[in-house]
Image 1 (cartoon, rainbow, N blue to C red):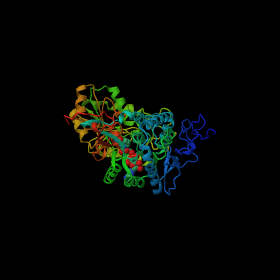
Image 2 (cartoon, rainbow, N blue to C red):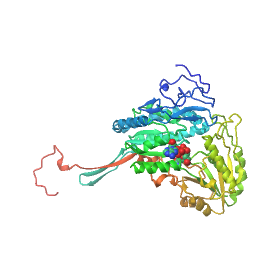
Image 3 (cartoon, rainbow, N blue to C red):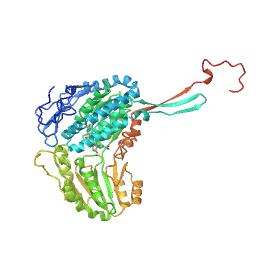
Image 4 (cartoon, helix red, strand yellow):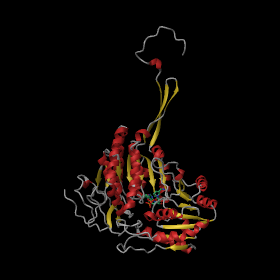
Length: 542
Ligand code: NAD
């Protein structure tokens, strides 16, 4: 097989022998041949369903055009999978479940080792798919893959995580607990982490013996399709991992399909609350992570340079489209005098298409999203905030048609303004002023969300007080974006998780989510042991 001739490929080696079986948005991509520019794709190929370990062309009558956010060129068309295709995916998973459940844990672990190795091998290819479809810079897209990969790596330790408990509860009687898989489970994913969030779900679900139907975001399903190909190559049996596409109808199917026992959702409040209620009412186990407004309290005693650098990276990285983006600054006392320096640093960030060398942030996902972000900036101005830095209307020279918004800073914001009450999900930092640490804690705790928070200070006592009194689920001390690595769980709180569900992604909590405890109490009387020596004396005790 010869090397492809697509102009936007990094084709350094012959193609993978099996890659033609799959559409991963781009035809014939492999670990070493994938797009590395935003050049127009001459003949975009449709995204396929992935059912029974095969990438199958959808028979859909309705399709979603997917555009490169840097150019708005068409990349692929994503199907609204038909009802028959949605059912076929669940049929496949349900058929695979008994065999997968009874496959030994050590065999599943071996497959997971291979899966991890393949993700590493295809790391750049996955990142390239993310940059092309989602828009984030290539370096940042590599981080997206890494954070998912780490969940898969941790899942390889399943043999020590799955051990149950045992206790002799009476003479010759033991109670033993086992963790059993749930059956067919589903994942519904957002656009902003096309590799990480599918990998928050699949590895733990699969290694514990569940079979999964995933609906990636209809806005960037390419990374999930590559993950499916890698799962097959690693040895996932047919039906253990399936992918369907679409929007509301596909989601409603998943919510109502009785064979699906549990749903993992990450995304916006509106979709998440709806999904949580309908799926819970249908008796399913649901973990649902929602929106956020992550605050940082900045104390004037903090290390100024390190703090400003941390804020800039966390507010504007990924164009602010991270659920843990640091979007809200609470400047305590004299820390407000740091604003001009924050603005100066933000001005120097390079806004460009994700494959361009030196880009610090790329475009936002869609023209609609850009419009919404720009209107929220305007609402801040209209309500009396001070626009210190305005990124509206920014166009990189080479990419005049992309969905770009430059770093934007609104100061003197108050808690009643719309730019404060709504999650903006763009490269916009809103800044509020307070006098004391207590004021900062009160302000942050009054916000409906509770995903992440950070405090910047050189005082251990201040940090300890903050950490104790703050209600957000993930606290950073002199570090922004405190997303825990997968030996812990992602512990959002308050309005950032649906229904106060108490379920958390990955870590021990993730293992609990994807397994059902079973206890077995067994009585094996020692008197009943066979082939024992005969006794000739009368028993004198019980
Ligand atoms: P979204 O809610 O629009 O989409 C998420 C998924 O839900 C998609 O698969 C989509 O097809 C589906 N969906 C959307 N609207 C629906 C509806 N009305 N009914 C049924 N299904 C629907 O979210 P998004 O824009 O893709 O992602 C951004 C959001 O996700 C932000 O709010 C962000 O904070 C949040 N997010 C949260 C976390 C977290 O861990 N808390 C992580 C990442 C993203």
